Image 1 (cartoon, one colour):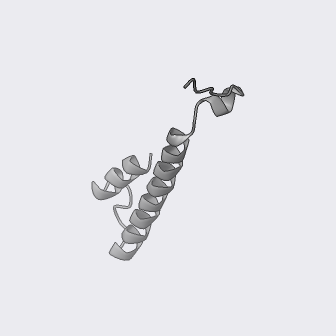
Image 2 (cartoon, helix red, strand yellow):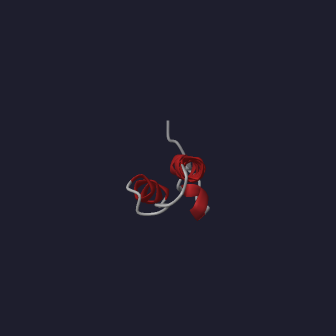
Image 3 (cartoon, helix red, strand yellow):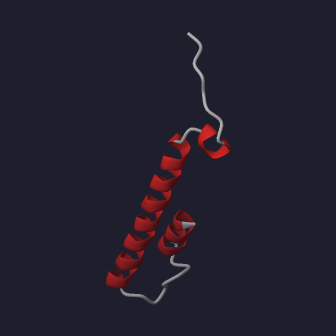
Length: 61
């Protein structure tokens, strides 16, 4: 969603009558939201799937 908001902002679909300072503030907010969502997704992507099921891994050597 943040990238969609950024594209709408850059295409002047939203904020058409805003001054440059307000446009930059909203742009920074969208970039911040994108970074937060991307980092949360990265953290969840690195988690071991067995943590949610309660099963444990046994390595046979």
